Amino acid sequence: MIWNETMECMDRANMRTLQSIRLKKTVERIYQNCEPYHRRMQEKGLSPDDIQTIDDIVKLPFTSKKDLRDYYPFGLLSSPMSEIVRLHASSGTTGKPIVVGYTRNDLAIWGEVGARCFTAYGLGKQDVVQVSYGYGLFTGGLGAHGAVETIGGTVIPMSSGNTEKQIMLMHDFGAVGLACTPSYALFLADALHDSSIPREEFKLKVGAFGAEPWTEEMRKEIESKLGIKAYDIYGLTEIIGPGVGHECQCQNGTHLCEDHFYPEIVNPETGEPVAPGEFGELVFSTITKSGMPLLRFRTRDLTRLIYDKCECGRTSVRMDRILGRCDDMLIIRGVNVFPSQVESVICEMPELEPHYFIVVDRVNNLDTFEVQVEVKEEFYSDEVNKLLDLRKQIVHRLQSVIGLSPDVKLVEPRSLERSQGKAKRVNDKRKFK
Image 1: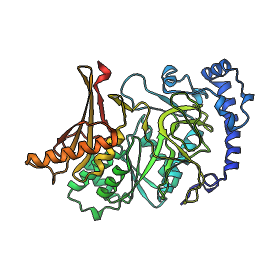
Image 2: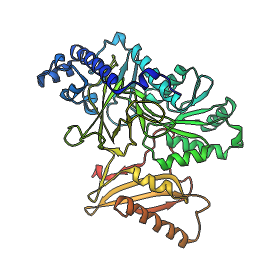
Image 3: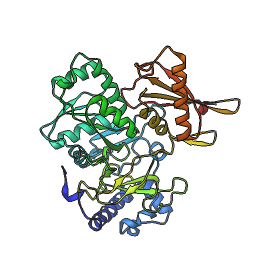
Image 4: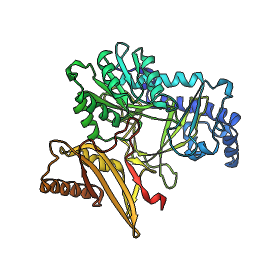
């Protein structure tokens, strides 16, 4: 199913023409109404007349998360506060949050791109969807909520937490879809298994999961435990929230809503564009937003873009699975390590639960690397030799994937802290030394 065939199936030439028109209009708006952008463009010797086509986007300055903090709270707005009808903010726990303002038109765009996502997952106006992302300043809850309402579906606005009630209402209200973080989906799967309600009494078929990185192995784990089809939904608070991109039923990359959010891939070190199809840092420009449009926002996500037409019929550019984030990458003893690499190994081993925690420290000027991982109940044994053999297997597999041998600690089932929002997977103690 396709929500907006005109935009999602537009040919490449017409899409670039549309993007050019929208970029030029957005640059003019920002130049006239946002002093920090106005000043930066002048420093580069640019005026709106220098931006005629989408190819000219490389002339424009980048925007970073630091900029949003520096101009906190409203310094990057391009609309007066009288036109801002909603504020959202990042879920960061330290320092000033990232604040984004939305006009009514921005909220309409958000509902539109969200509808494309949920339609691509096979959901429609006949379906009940339980939204278990957090509501409030975090964009997840209200973003998914608006998407379901736009397609005409029925929303259960649960938010996260209160797990027993989650399971009860999922059953009693007949939820067909579930929207939450992948880690919370696993938490709910365990709770559903522990409940007295048989799985066959639930109508749950589809999951829309995002807000944190997850691997193909974790997807399989979720699908197996919940008995559903699990889809990725991609978004960033700074750009709009969930709805920037989505998988289709082919699940061969994430379709980006490029008529609203123009993507680039640049070298994360130099900021220069990479060759088509190469991996690099994902950059977005919002070309239709009016409240707080951003130019060339550096996401820190590492991926590549695929422009081939998808088997589903959509021509919109696809983003490959995110390898990790520039700022999530751990450098341990000179080796680049992404938490997703650890997760992929853990999820592919049948003896392990998909719950882990990484601890990095520095002792006597040498990096230490510990991975704590839960063993499934049926494999957790009092026989030391069995656990030692399992530990050796994990270390060997991680060594082959990462190039390092971590200190693996096997822990009892359900002993690691569970997340009801974004999962915290890493504690890098070196930052405090």
